[in-house]
Length: 453
Ligand code: URA
Image (cartoon, rainbow, N blue to C red; front, side, top):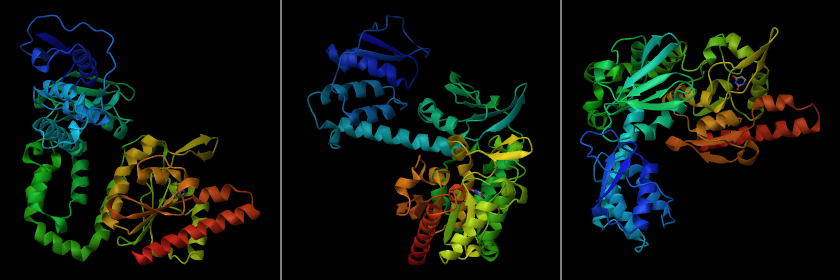
């Protein structure tokens, strides 16, 4: 019997190295014992000695499947993958054959892991603790599979500027603002149950809970009871469900505007990233809650930060002029920004604009998503690269993608164009006029797309 000891339950690199050696040495899957370091009942013995892993046919499809399957809780995951890798050496199209019981089983395992990854992203709730170094956010989650490591990158990107810990019964992940490391698991009782974050989460939840779209069965499927224990807002679910019909009536009356106003109110206290520390206030979006057209800028500028409204400074004045030229009535448009706080560098008394980085855009995207969800515009104009990143979820080159309809999530149409500040930076003259005319043409296209939607 060959014995392979992996460093942790979802050790993809360790598995890759070992399985390559095993297949190259023609050791059959049935003759291998896969174990995980530090797990109970580990018999003594020597691990397979490390050696150079020889080249092997590893189709991309197999690599993708293995990445998910190694996270599955089934102890036979490694044997099954090993078997598939042996077979794929001779059966080129094996992984396309869902009728094959092994392929079917592996696909089902990958799907279950995918669902678990999604659930964890949706249902991890942090509570705030204070230690000598400041706030530390802590959450407990009980995943069905070994997904903590696979999901840790997501939480690092989402909460890059906070210190946080996610505890699971088997393992824990810690982010100190710079380095991610993993430690032992913990019991639910090690997470404090009351703190300042709970009312905030509860407000978020109540703000986004829409009884008009309430489907209790779908809600239970999406948020199974087993996750409820971790959710501060779960305590409100029965009351929200019970009161749904009355709330629907009230909401129809008050309209989405009130919900949006509540959301803006909640955003005033946002401390999700450090930008709130230097800024004067949160600058939330404004405009009708049923606007068909939404404009998204980068972040408030100096004037917006002082006045608390988007696009009221020099860039806003240029935007107003271009909107009029394009036949768009600003009061009919919902106008917001990718990032809701002003980022600047103070030089003497001057505050010099600094573009938000990818992390800040990602952290602030939560608010933009809520605005999109509530306003549900048919067309969204992205003013500049930061807005493009926030809505398309990737880096964009404005010059390459501007001026043509793009698909956004939720079936919305998007249109990327330049930021008005870019036009302000061009020396007055023929080039400035040409660029301004192009900007107006992009806005005209947005108007036509909105009318046609
Ligand atoms: N620039 C932006 O992107 N947004 C504003 O609100 C003002 C200037």
